Length: 435
Ligand SMILES: [Zn+2]
Image (cartoon, rainbow, N blue to C red; front, side, top):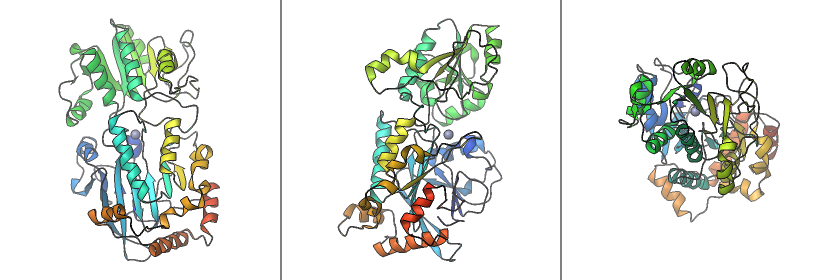
């Protein structure tokens, strides 16, 4: 995509339109209440939650994208000075409240940016999202998939959230005389807390700012800030550590539960007094989610619940897709190319390493060129365009767009050669799009 048009979860300026996938802090770094660099497009729920994070924000800069609908935005091409149309659709990312993926299409082709996402297929809500995305990507092939590669490694296997949630309920129920603390972020894992509350018929304590969030999300009776009303407390993740648990246990017997897909130390807790306050380690939890319901049920407690410390359990409850879900997602989207959007200071997992075989570079020729084939009688396609006021993209325009794309790259080469460069690590989009 041409530089200077759009930016997703990147707040360094220099673009005309900014897109926010969700409100987790690692996606809002550089964004502040004094933001004035351009309009921000986000889901309706994210816009609703926005004031809690950015109280003095100029809300006239927020643009709401309804999930599942195409929206057309006209921007100015810095290269030509003329108007260029970008279509965008927000798709539910099933990550935290308000989180969406963005599907873009325009002269540059088609890009899908997942943000953080969980791709389960076990709930009705997720089936709806799947159908929505499938309908959208069936219209046009995805040139580049920007993928949440947090768990893009076959060692990351964990169960659906509803299974993990029940495991957490079981832990709480098996400690009837203990206080319970659960580490959570400022947004996300509400469904887990609702499940605990519903099954155990208990209120959940949250800190005051989190209670405001819960009220904005419409949960008024389940959460409380009064410790006397419940033995289950959801606490900020940063305050959840061994020292805290040991301190609490000098007052009352207390168990900590950390819901996360991240790998944890799996050694028995005995003799592990030097583990320190941090839970995150590079050690792999070898237990797998097999997809075999019966066998998984029988191994549930053993496989995805770990007693990390005498006071602490870890449970593989994650709002990110596990490896097999990432694979399923890529098979569904069938992108021509892809790029991971998550890297830590210590590692970056290139999704191409595991899933390059599923991408367009290895697809049959017909698939590669499907996007150029505008069928005369494709009624659905044209109806969709009319409904959302899209400008039809003709076959010749597609070809022109492709040649423009190559020109922007400064690569005077065939399309196939361009793809090979990508596989070797060359960028085919300008660096306005997040790495
Ligand atoms: Zn997130």
